[in-house]
Length: 501
Image 1 (cartoon, rainbow, N blue to C red):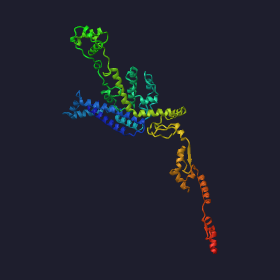
Image 2: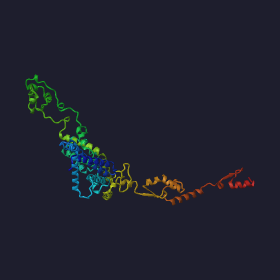
Image 3: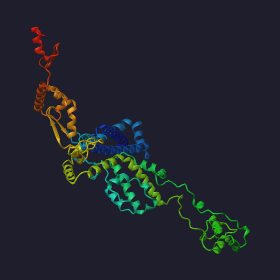
Image 4: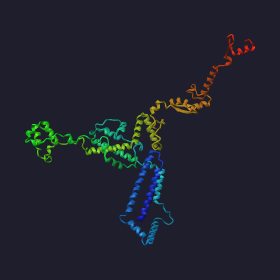
């Protein structure tokens, strides 16, 4: 029943709704890694569907069969009103067959579909929380899982046996591997490694165009380390010798008088076999007199090997292209690679009991979205964060005594973790303010005193001690009369008033 123009209008509407959905998806706030990955996959679906709509519109506008133009002509011809009523009748018949009298019309299926997509975007159901499959080690796009590839690398011949942590740091340094060690098994390992990185990048960044990346790599993969063309001499230059004019010699016996070395040099200049006895060399060289090299027997020529400066074999070219892809993918996944390294180091720094506790905690919070927040790292023991924003190792936490909590009543019940933080707080503003409120000076006498009653008792004791040592002028001040007699102030005043002095 649908005409070509109606189909064209419907596709335009769908395309506009898709563009609107793409804008809403792009401005949606995404706080966790899981939400970002799921959002990019939804955007990838919208982009692919928009491209399909654009292709359908292109086919309609191209109008190879002429149906669109025929419909336009029928609507703009002399019987345009007849065509209008004919189409109106078809619409009435269509909807009267689908709906009974008095029945409410259903909403537009396209509007219903995009309304459902909007609801799923705002509050995705549980079945749409995991749009992509990741292993437990990958942490839904936060880490790399290269354990299988590490095992495959360890089984290669001539390869150094390294730990998994070292492998994470050096798996892209393939230019350090000698070319003679890059055989079939190495090629198979490289294929698996590149396939995993490409598939991983497709899962975490579905909008990234890997096709254009491969086209750029294919242009010239000799620019990558380890596969630059050598600038040494060519095969002919390597085996070049001194050319010998044979016009002055009438037989091979005369050539024998030149010696082995001179004959060898002349044979090498013609790329002929230069081995054998003196007579064999002379005969082989004399055969070329007056003949072009193309007419000689191929058995006389030396077998040429693929020299260092020549083009590599197809096998080496495939390896070079795979290594070029490895360099690009490792650079694109640098953030996930660094996170994987930190995660492995954190696991290696923990004891068996701590790892068991961590596994139990991970099982309890496996569905928690808070653990996916890239700004809030996994920290079940509430460890302090290091300079890199990650929790410090548990052994370091205990070494600094951060598992011991000190409470200060003078600071209003504030708690301090570790002796270093506790000792430092006595010179900070909070403790000084608490001492000032008590009317007590914050001096060295009150170091390590955290209880208010203890501080007041110590202050009273210090005041009493200071009172005893205080200098009293009325009692301790001394005077001397004209005869040199020393007396107290009170006695001096009494004698002076009596006129004795």
